[in-house]
Length: 219
Image 1: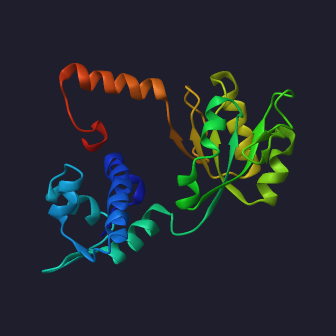
Image 2: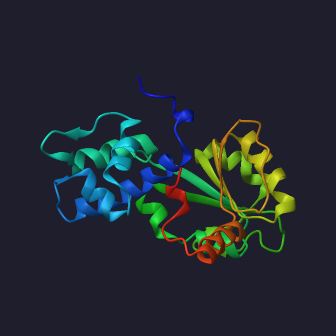
């Protein structure tokens, strides 16, 4: 019996995106099969770790063949939820929000940023990468109208919780939080935190110890 999704180790879930990236790269090279060792070598992981991670979600390997690349791409996309498009928005038209909006990899992965919002009257109405910055008062209506399910919060820490509450009330189901504060969402939505200062602190910790590789790969 496969474990419940919320019981799967966080490092394993993070590695799924790395596996998908590598497998998609192999698919682009017209590779049809890959072994767990070959996939592990590409990511500096053991073949046992690769098999253990994937085994949480099913048996995808084939005796004498390894993994069929097109099949594994399809399965990983289903597991990660990227086998279908997601409409998203950005709240915060400052430096981070403006930098994220034109990021074309979102589009290639099926994430479509269809609106950007800001609470500053001086910013509302301006154009960012072809999107008119909308006031926060437009958020509930546009979330429903454009079927927005995911949101990126790129506002100062003191505004983040209020923004999260408005997004939840509007019906957003996932939030990527760039504000340097922990959001209280009462288990109503999924939240991913991206704190750049924390990431740099972790990098400094690794560098000071002479540790190589990624901390995300360690359980």
